[in-house]
Image (cartoon, rainbow, N blue to C red; front, side, top):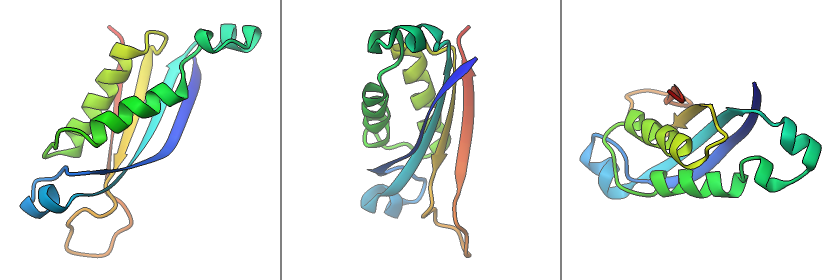
Length: 120
């Protein structure tokens, strides 16, 4: 199956278990891989034969900048379900949500989750 990949989508959100996270917020980064058949788009060179990246970006932004969640697992799940619901050509989606400023008691470069969801 072919793939469209968007990486490093950066947003500011208020997700977290700790009260300070939900009050002050922090940066989140999202990577999305969408699996679908791109043959028709490649042959026709028409946007309507594929998925519009700008619309996917807007959908991810709405989730991350929207209602606060305690867990980034919930953020990733909502993004995956939104993409499968709103973008019919996508058969499978992989979503990684990065939380580089998670409140951990030590030095680290990233905390992240990845969910993989498919139709049916």
